[in-house]
Image (tube, rainbow, N blue to C red):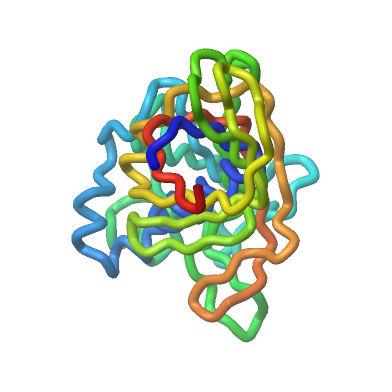
Length: 235
């Protein structure tokens, strides 16, 4: 069914990296004309409290690189600023093709590989709400915790939460298993209603894979995020 869902920090961070971050990598957009049209800078993607960042330096994070593998110094890239798409991640080559500046996102997993556009530390900035405020007003919903795995194809995603709880009349209820969330990333970003203030970073133990280059150290992060109208399977 469709429910209001609250994602914990872990799952929200993985969601923003997997479902949204990869489509903000400029080399992907240069290969996918239809997606490039959708990913038009200046387009509104969500509420004004939604800010999504990729940064090459966060103290203690695994994705830190003061310079990328093409010698470009780190920058802080706002992918979404106040709900609007404001930036993409670039290498020198993609920046040249799209008439902009490189962002310090060209990374190679080792010297045997060519640098390609990769994320570093990618996260949703904290918003104004407490966890209790986010549960408030939900008659029946799902609190989804932890990322168990998932897949994305263009803008479609499927994620399995490690576990979850029912939300009943604004309070946490019974534990539930097999929480599978599916949807369209753009619709899901638009359906984000509330962003928590309880931000957490999480270094990915496995790292990130792309174009045969794996595992690249990255960090994801987010506060709790409340999203309306999410398709939840396994229920």
